[in-house]
Amino acid sequence: MSDKGINDAMKIMADFDRGYYYAKQRNEASAGKNSLSEMLDLVEIFSEVDGYNAELAKGMAAYYAEQARMTRKK
Image 1 (cartoon, rainbow, N blue to C red):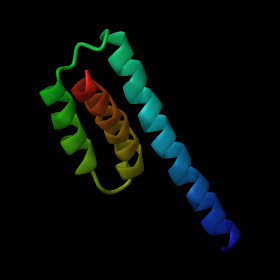
Image 2 (image 1 turned 135 degrees about the vertical axis):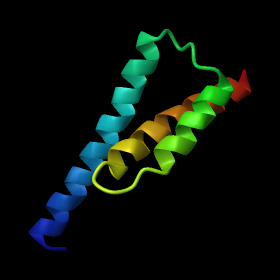
Image 3 (image 1 turned 120 degrees about the vertical axis):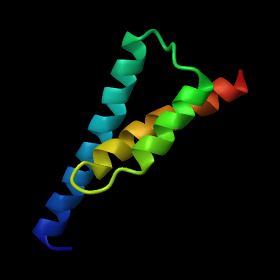
Image 4 (image 1 turned 90 degrees about the horizontal axis):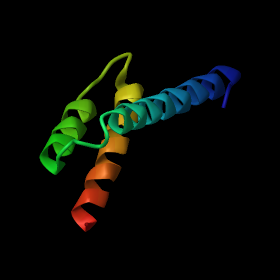
């Protein structure tokens, strides 16, 4: 893989992580008041984002999907 490819991969990973932790902070700030259906709606919306912010949105979707799975287990 070329240096450009490695740099692009690192940027994508960083954007995904940023999205994940941003969603986590937002959810914790609201004291986790999102219902299961709201979380699933967010997963769907963030999963559909494409273009420049797609990886950021995928990180956010991953966080809300994880929270939805944990809510279902309760």
